[in-house]
Image (cartoon, rainbow, N blue to C red):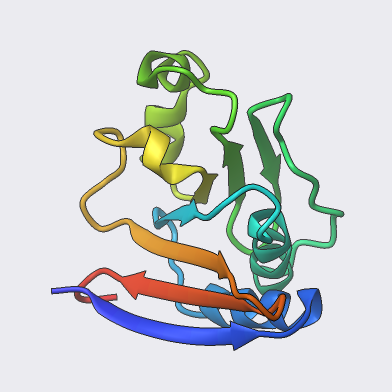
Length: 144
């Protein structure tokens, strides 16, 4: 049974704050599947996660690198599957090993990793509303 929480964000700062709060619930080995249209704020959300994990680095989208690693109280692995055509491409960059590590793995366009995500993966959906605010829906796995 998944628990679902919903937040409305009126700014990038609010989106980062929601993500930083989520970071306080995460533990080593957790995975987050981020979903939402292009430009909706997925990387902004990851920036908030990084802040909440004590990562001082500037978080940028790994679109062309596919994966970036950041060091904080828990390592953060930021994957962007936007350009991924098949799950085999994720396997080639070591996604399966990364998601089984003792870090936090967050994957933008998580729906493209279908079949590779662990059963206890968090799901975050970000939706642009007509007034330019964002609806952020967080589904936490049972027991989290």
